[in-house]
Image (tube, rainbow, N blue to C red; front, side, top):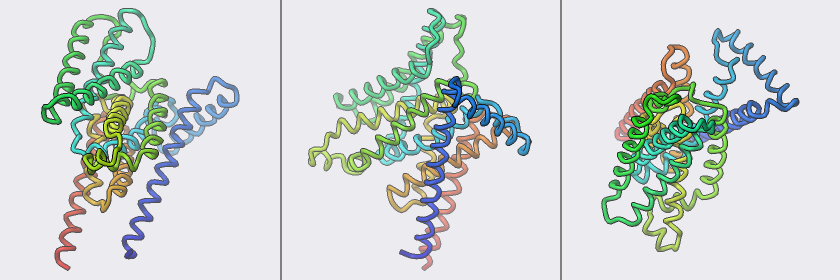
Length: 339
């Protein structure tokens, strides 16, 4: 292995390690926020707020002293990990559209939750309702794909349009009722991130990473040669269902900041950037997570400094990373072709 390749590998590992440390820190921060009513944790929470005020003072910002911004930033950081992680498998299986489909399904779930809340006064988590509906939608897509003779993307298109149609009908039916406000869920907004939504994202992140690590070889096998996996007596249907359900839960968590329209971008764009410069599937997985983190952090910085929506800012930074990766890969290919 050349010195350049060794340095590259080392930098990638350092980047992934720092991302892991940052993600754990965000989960701990969300845990402190959730358990602040307890005396010991409450004192840690107070110290964290003091540290946030100090950071705001020296940085000239008004971000780190507000708990709702902690939750939004922590949720964004975790999205930057799990969305590209799942998206890497989807992109290599040519299933990029599934993220958009499940986002529309989750939109129908939010619409159901809002309507029930308005009619009955129920105060439960809308994200939990969206999660349940999203999982049911994922299972529906898988069921249609397994039991119909249509082209592979037809069930996805049916679920995408059908779930959005159901959501719009519910919203139209509930128009004028107190509490019906769907705009933030369509376009994304950091104010949508509630304490329960942020905690749900933390749980989703831990579960998705743990499941992906435990089933890495199996998911890799069905990604590149599903027919051979069937011949090897691997339960392909089960792993396909597992992947699509993980996609559904990640989409629901990411929808809080990115919204229905933009959520699929974090499943696809960081992975597309990584594939331009990576030399293996594992390296694509690592680089997509790193590009995801750059997109989220850069997007938040741009959003806060310019007073613009966080979701759109994150996606724009992700696309900028993709374009830079395309340029870098073009120069690399040009250099190779001349030697």
